[in-house]
Length: 581
Image (tube, rainbow, N blue to C red; front, top):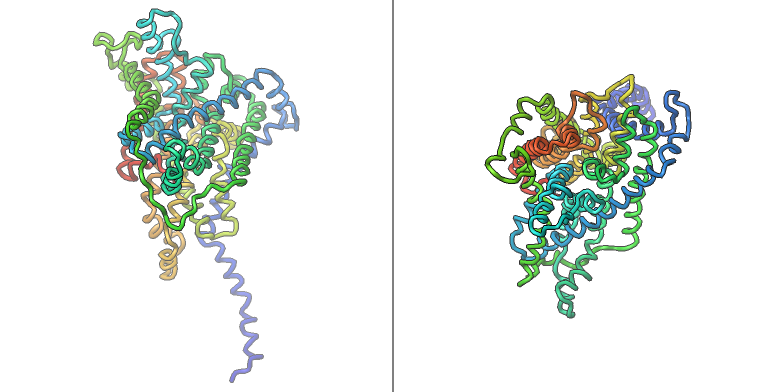
């Protein structure tokens, strides 16, 4: 038998070389990639917001610490009124969106209402139409002097007073709600699809009618989803720029986003804009925390021993009134604005109505062949959006892999950074990028790179949520088998994991591409003379007041969007944009 005492020193003598090898293992490509990922997330998320906070306390030119920016930002009644207007507008639009969305979601999920495919199509249409383009449609429909609806009303009644006026606070709230309700629809329908009919049946046995059972049993169970959707719409509304600018400015309704835009007029007052934007960020974070506290006090679960059965509610003669309501909302959100936009895009003068003498394609030929920026903005939109979508998906899938597989101790922190832009309004993120990277040494203002990076950060939460859901569906055993057979971590991701989730990744890429291609709130603060996107050029055309050319350019934007939506339906499923992961 060997002597244990003499056998022990040998490993001790060899202890030093393994220590060096252990240190070298940290230099593996996968570990270096994780470090690079941390730096990228800090660059995209933490640095812009941190710089925004710092700049809000700096004196312009000298960089000295001061509270003067906050005193300037909130020292005038006009600026405070803009903040109050934004909060009221966000609340009104969110509640109106719930009124539109909840009955439609209930009808599609729980009842035998006819035409569910038509309703789904209207919801999809409202989702993909950029809000500012819907605003243009409603300006053509409900402008107090020459809007189509008011012209028809004068012709029928002989009255001079307009029946509807889009240039009002009510008109602004309704137009925003008509293009925001799909967000609540998605949340509520997804929740309704998971609830069995057993408790509704029990309520019916105890004498409750269909409406009573829905109001007292079904809707309380999906209240968290309704509240979540309302909060999302509220946050989107207070950060929205295009619709308030097109409708609110002519109506002299000042909101936070249009006031921030005024701070960026010459001379640019980025320090004041940063100070004015900070409460918007605090409001967003506060509302998210309030939602968690509110829902934490109660439980919203359906407990049964089995999965339960879902039976459609038979509406009888009420099927058609319910369908009519859904069709009415869809007509207001999609059919009427798109119809008037198409008419105007092929018109010599949109107010003269439909006639062969008023028909022309010159609006399109002017944009495609004679306008100095139209084709450039189309190209910019396509490649900015594609680059941002690619970056967002690559970053998101790597972060989702780290979080799902718990590869590093701070994996959850990476997930937090990836989702952080969800609670940062897009306009605040854009100002943060301006503050952080517009000046030397990087001097990125007006370049393609700053727009791509801002889009990537803005829509990273969409890509991450999609990637995280896909990653949870892949069991780690196949990856472990690859590692046992000698495959490295990166090779395993590329050869095993990525092919298994490529359908979900494609869907996520297309969603990010589509929403980036229509993004205005971020782009309008960062574009330069040669980096204008279609959304920014469309806003410029709206200020010029040529609605025929404006409608034609909106038609081009819709056509590009529809092409990618059809591609997404073919490759990632018909509901890829309305799917809640």
